[in-house]
Image 1 (cartoon, rainbow, N blue to C red):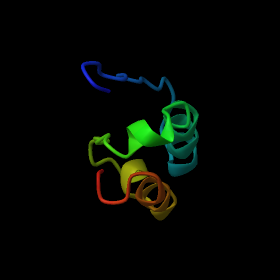
Image 2 (cartoon, rainbow, N blue to C red; image 1 turned 90 degrees about the vertical axis):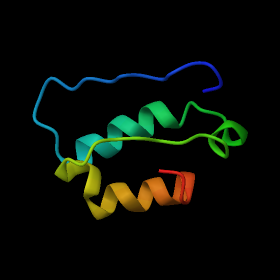
Image 3 (cartoon, rainbow, N blue to C red; image 1 turned 30 degrees about the vertical axis):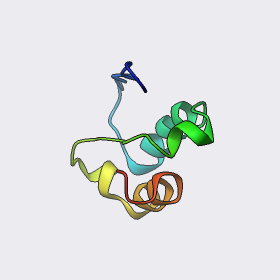
Length: 66
């Protein structure tokens, strides 16, 4: 954010959509709403990242900025 990078975040166990959603919810909910409007969220294309539960959450939080 601004001049800072948030992360990276590492997960020790196998990642599934629910665990991934919990991970990003915990970390992204701490970012103020005004800052999220100008924030771009980037992730790689593993299956947990593409799950509807994840994409619905990200779209609601960032609209098209992910």
